[in-house]
Image (cartoon, rainbow, N blue to C red):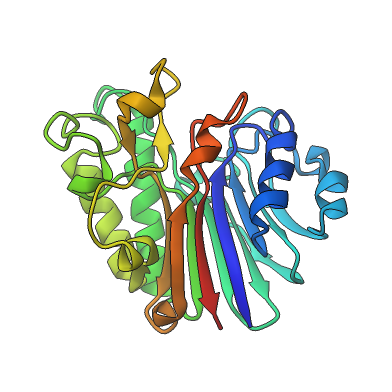
Length: 262
């Protein structure tokens, strides 16, 4: 059963419901994983999504912050959500398709501005969150699974606009990159996007602070699609829909896509 999946930090699902509906109409993924929904689950505008064909949803939400949701044309079963680092945040939800594929949707903490846990509690929370993800995957090896989301780390030199300038900037520091690699290794996850697009600059996020985000192109690849090694060869057709970042009142993230033949 082939299916196409997209992941997108929407930065408020209620504020940007029209953009979600536009993206679904134009690109039609079978499954859409959203992060930073900023909404209780019962306030997510499911009626409009259902009218567009996305009649299934599993989600974890909270008022005004965080929040993750999986919208689907295909039947889904809710298989849980973890509170890594005991933050009390809605940052993870998992669902299973009828073919047995488990989809994990993550919103890893951004980590604040200073890459030093001694002076920045949020950076410490980010590292703790990744450590607990790593341990969870180490203790319970995932199989036939896809992991997506805003992981808030751009791991490779060509995942950022300037590697040297960003080495001390949260999202690309060596300690974060190492933590993400350890998490990936613990679950034997394969980076599907870079399996498909192995070379070249590739971004999924551009700051609101840049008046000419497109021209300046100072982006980072913060949004990821991984798959367990047993199904990684089934992944293909990866892409970032960069144009979506230029829509009216956009999220600062663009959706990332992949297709799986399973």
